[in-house]
Image 1: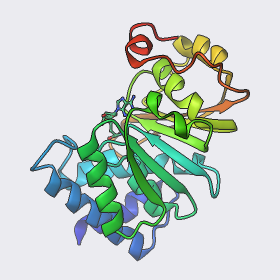
Image 2: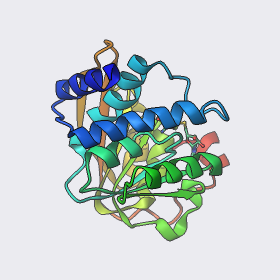
Image 3: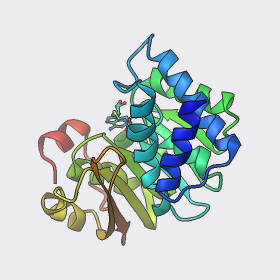
Image 4: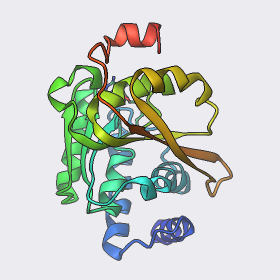
Length: 230
Ligand code: SAH
């Protein structure tokens, strides 16, 4: 199938050599998303070549930043990005996909079962309200959820001290406006991985480390986080 060949060559371009089984799972997930998308909106991207680049190449460009065997939380996983491609390509990771919209989470969880992805589970709810999950993750990640200062406040409480937040962004431009949040939340900007996708679009993976406990007043309620970002 043409899409699988294209997928393979695009992933080779970002130093990933998927097995036939991994390619088959990525391809099957594409079919599942496109099919479910007829019932409710999961993505605006359904054309195969676009999907390969904007969902798979994009989310897997960041795969190199996840430490081996890490326990990972994907905040606002939506239609399963980056959590599903990551779970397929990185079986060493144990991933939880979290989203405020229950039906998206049900779709991602059901798909993970159908694809026999034992390393991916899902939870419905809002990140700032899931107190039972605070302090339990080695890595938190998020793509296309909100601005960086807001994301940092959602991510920091979820991390263990020493854990990292991996943010999917277009470029490094939000770093400047996030300095206050980084300081107040006991984070430290560690590094970024900057690159260009096959379609010429720029991508930046920004990595922050939790260097101390998150002060008790964070996270605030979502209304306040949004209205008065740190
Ligand atoms: N990460 C996916 C989806 C992005 S759309 C992708 O890259 O394609 C943003 C998603 O974030 C939505 O599904 C929304 O329900 C979810 N979301 C926004 N704020 C959230 C919060 N505070 N907690 C959990 N999910 C949230």
